[in-house]
Length: 437
View 1 (cartoon, rainbow, N blue to C red):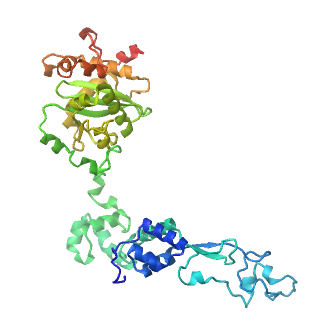
View 2: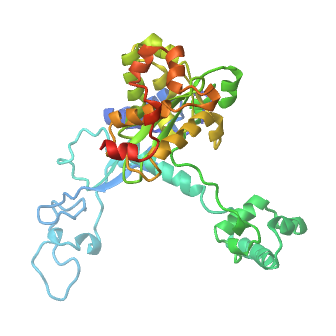
């Protein structure tokens, strides 16, 4: 790279290549392009020549579109192929003219032999140009070819076939004897590889020995990861369970989802107030971030922003993908922060055990495998009312509804559409919904 240009020593990006393509179409020189991108002009030149797209635009004579000779317009030759039977047809109209004629000279364009090496920015229209073999620079094609070359250059192993065979003669017999890769490498330092590399080569099938020959590896299975977990780890910053415990709260809200049978996409968004033991459930058409945000917005409009912020000040939930946008859940319809979302540790559902216990009561009415397609929000409210009208030992025999009536107030419970149920009519069996329909 030129010492006079303060480059960033980075590879060209797609944005850089798009700029190169646009400037080539304008007829800008490599020097001016390199000055803008802080690169050496040779870098731009190599990029264009390496990734230019070859194309054929057949435009020869009227009778032979595949004739690329510079003499094709005024050539009068006949029988250049030297056949025994003479023919009176001009060679310029013969498909084999360029292959058999000794005076053939391919027509070339000076733009393709020197900068800019491509047809971008040419004044001639493609229909008026007589050069059949054309080159164009396309930014997206160039970036794709660059990525493929970069990936292929890093594929494979850094070893010749002979070296691999020599190592295989040592490793495979010892593995068949029951020795571990660590044991083999400890006694044979001449192999010059790590334990991780040997496991990788065995997994790729490069040695005669296979994974099944290893005594312990066949007992291990890859760890299962829930398909619906949050993949963006950045959302957990400041929202971990340790950060939640540091708040030392006396009451909060736990949140989760309950899924229907595999045939249905209907889902229940459930909430649990740890102090009042109050259980809420809301029906969603799909288990997505937008559906959860819709429930939050609906409750905020029904309760008011400040009332919502006081009731749902702190929420603890799991790491399901439907909760993967905490900023959208924490920000209200008016732009005011209405809640604070925190996440449990992976595979630690006991950290929100109160909600999990409430789910057991919900499953008494809606067992696993039940389809939620026939449910409406009115049915869900009926189920929630029966659950909240069940006396709890931890509340001294009181019901969650009566406890929430004192702490949250009648208006909040009306916003949740909760109603008390006569203790003698509380039903926690599937018959509750069956008889209702």
